[in-house]
Image (cartoon, rainbow, N blue to C red):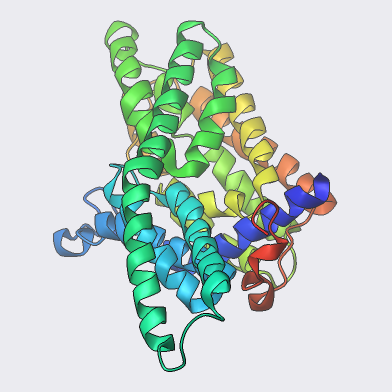
Length: 356
């Protein structure tokens, strides 16, 4: 069982790691040019939405399909990813990680079934129309099935968080919030559930702890520092961690660290531990913000901390970072990321449990 989980984690890493550079580029553009960024620019800010909505999912879908069935698998994986993108109103990284390799696998099985039955001279015709016809079918299925399922997962996570908040079990909400965040459901949770509850609470008391639960940059910072300190030497995850720290902690673009967890799913335990410890501190000390920090940068935090709350809030950010770092570093020492470079990233799907 453990070996299958490691194979699955390695496959996830193969889809995510090659595309971290593109996500880093998006993070820099977002942090610098959005209206609340370092150098606001209306023209360049228009790149932010299309890149996270289309570019990143398509790259992940292509990579997943290519890992399964070469370039042909990559093409049909990217095509099917377009179906989940249009079928949902949130970034579809999770959908891309599902339909990309699945589409490549479907095409691989089709090729294996008919490869000896194609008349000589018709190979190119088959190669073109097989992707076109099967791709059309997969795009439609992804649009009506996969996309809505991912959205439903986001709604279910939001409902669970809402129930925990109402039951006054705020620290336990990290068990739902942190895994949901790395699946790019962070905006659905924050703006759909936590912010409305926070607005109500802030009107009554002048501050709300709800604004701290999803936006805390501490756990993500701790995770990135863990990769930098305890990550495999020479790996892309370790080498890219410093730049990601700046974009995440100073720029407030939390999405930049999500692939680091997806590349090694057990690292979600570090995020949960950091989030739980910080949220527990916030509850004990009565910490809160006057509004949602947008984006979740430490500078945005400083702008919305009410008078007399700086120690409580900033200490909670520090606690989240420290706990996440120690748990993450321990995991990386005991169970390092399986990353052997480009050769492994293009390995056949036969090594992936359940898709052989």
